[in-house]
Structures are given as structure tokens and as C-alpha cells.
Amino acid sequence: MDTALLSADYQQLRGFVAVAQALSFSRAAGAMGVSPSALSQLVRGLEERLGTRLLNRTTRSVSLTEAGAALLARTGPALAELGEAMLQARAGREGIAGRVRVHASRFAGELHVLPILARFGRDYPDVVLDISLDDTVIDIVAGGYDVAIRIGELVERDMVAVALGKEMRQLAVATPDYVAAHGVPEHPRALLGHRCIRWRWPGNSAPYHWEFWEEGWFQVAVDGPLILDDKQACLEAALQGAGIAFAIEPKVREHIAAGRLVPMLERWSAPFPGHYLCYPQQRHMAPAVRAFIDAVRRGA
Image (cartoon, rainbow, N blue to C red):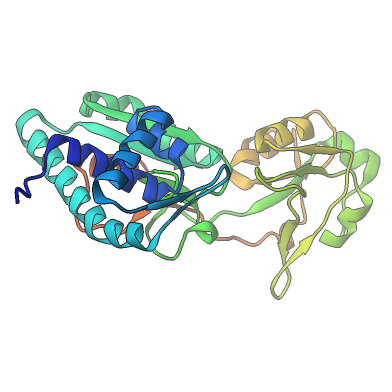
């Protein structure tokens, strides 16, 4: 029996592994650059050739059958190894190339990614950076990302994590006019009597509760007339005098120095782990991914 891996076999296995790892035809199709229907035909063709169902499909979800889980355990690492070998061979012949998918919070992207883009493009002209700047907390692997940058408390335990810069803290700030009209809260819980500009974490229905330190972290479910899902918009609203905002200190330092904003409750504003560059543990890393990681670390 001929057991050679044909081109059609490879494509079907590659499609199956992509769907099995993402548990989504649409996400896997996007990562592979094909349509969901084409990807579905690849997987169906593999199931027909093997004579067994590999994936359970509903209109809302995708899950692995027992046979599918067993196949993924055997073929997933093998295909990753094959892809890595091909990338390394190409890198040795033509230089570093490929696509790197990056997910970062908006501020992390502003601080650590955007400043390196021009230099990275000059150094690695054949690398495509596919970057998502988004405050949503996502599953890096399931989303098909190679690298993410997020605050320390959100780093998944099974990720390799490299610190970028120092600890950070959040400050409550408002304009001098707001302070003159409403005063300064003497304790974080006194914020309940103020007009706070609330931020809603993407994917959450309720606004974020402000966090302070007093012999331990505690939260204040502030109230106010304005809820936004963008931190920069919260800061802009505070600069216009709409109320008190809660912002990362580096974002407001210049406004405080210029007298546009007044910091409050600094005694209770403790530092927390700053940004980390994180990526899945892997035996071999694509040269393009390694190049991006090194560039971010140099620029930090």
C-alpha cells in the first residue's frame, strides 16, 4: 500500500488541523486565506477518505470527536514541524519571510508595537505583520495569533511571558474646573458621590470596577453619566470636563504636568505588573516570529 503523503492529503490534513485547533471554520479559514466553504469541503473529503467523522458540527459550535482528537494529537505537531522546516529552508535561501499575527491591547500597541514598525519593515521586507489592536481578552492559540502583548495579570499560565518595561498604575484624574466645582474625593469609596467616566471592557456587559490598594486590592463600582468602550475616549471626555476618568499613568502624565488634569487618590493607586510579550511554548519557532519578538524586546 502506497503511504506517500500526496499534495491533496497535505491540504486536507492542514485544513483539519487548522479547524481542530481554532474550533471554528471561519477563524481557521481566515488564517489560511480560504473561504469557509472550501475549508469545509477539505475536511469533509478527509473524513470520507478515512471513513470516520472527525468533527462534530452545529450551527453554533465545532468540537472534536474521539477520532478527531487522536488524529490531531498525531498530525498537529508533525505539520507544525513540517511548516517550520519549510520556513527555515526558505529563510536560509531568501532571508526571513512569512506572516506574523499579533494581538495587543490598544495602549500596548501604541507603546511597544507602533514605534518599531518602520524599522522592522526595513530590516525584514518580506515579513507581513498582521496586527490587531484590541482591548478584548482573547485566547491567543484559538485566535490563531503568534504573539500577544497584554498586562501581566492577563497572561495565560501556559504562555512564555517576557516583561516589557516597568510596573504601571492607574490614576483617577479630572480637570481643575471639575475639582473646583465638585471637590476631590478623600477615599476611593467617596467616588460614589462623583461623576465618573466609566469604561466597559470589550466583551463585557457591565462597566469595569475601579481597583485600588489598601492592605490589599479592592474594587469600587463607580457611577456616572457616561460609559464608553474606548479608554482614549474616556480620557478625552475627562479633558473636556465631563467627570473623573481612571487612566494608565503614562497616558495622563503629560496632561498632569501641563495642568490640564489633576491626579486624585494617589495614596491608593498601587503599581501592578506592566506589559508582557507572550507566546505559546513551542519547540521550534518560525524565523519571522522570532524576528518580531526580538524587535519588540529591543524597542522596549
